[in-house]
Length: 228
Image 1 (spheres, rainbow, N blue to C red):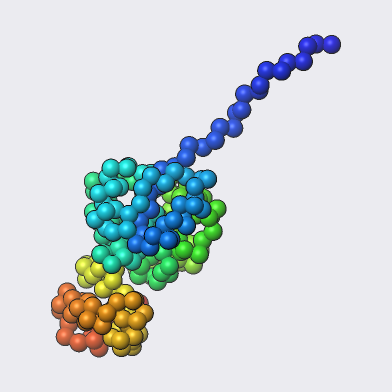
Image 2: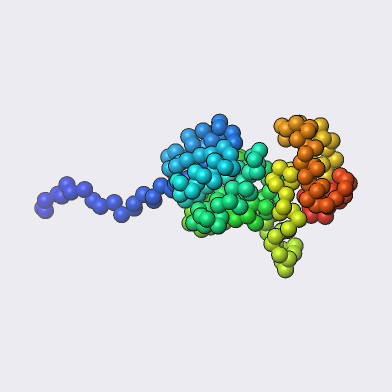
């Protein structure tokens, strides 16, 4: 009988390299939760709670994928994407938001995000989504994928950009959508956790940018673009 070899066998199934991930969200508790849940799957190389902090630190840490909140007080995910996509085209962005509004999804994809998932996603699903985005795939929660398909199927020959809509910040769009749904300023302030004065400022900015004079014109404009 031949001698039994005790030499260790070579493992042919190597572990995939841990992806470098950066978190952008203005809620510290949420960032801590994501860090804890993803710790076994990825390397979290940094985090930021503001647009300015995100832009500065993403450039330094050079992550593979940025998990990006859509709505933040200083401009949100769209502002981060606008600042980073030309200078750091190798970094991929995956939106992670509580919002499932069609205009948020389409706006972030227009700006350069590779995917959009909601915060109800499970940790394992989120880890898989990050891996797919890093590999170059586009990833959406099932319902959200329909928004993107509808947007392109409805007007296949239309340009992707909407210059009027694109000049509004995420917060201005949010205020506009609620205004078009018939919310009073006080109700908008309560819904978005901002002051009535801040709501008034956002409405004034929207009116000025869109060159309109009252909320009724805004409501009609928003309905025409299916923002309501």
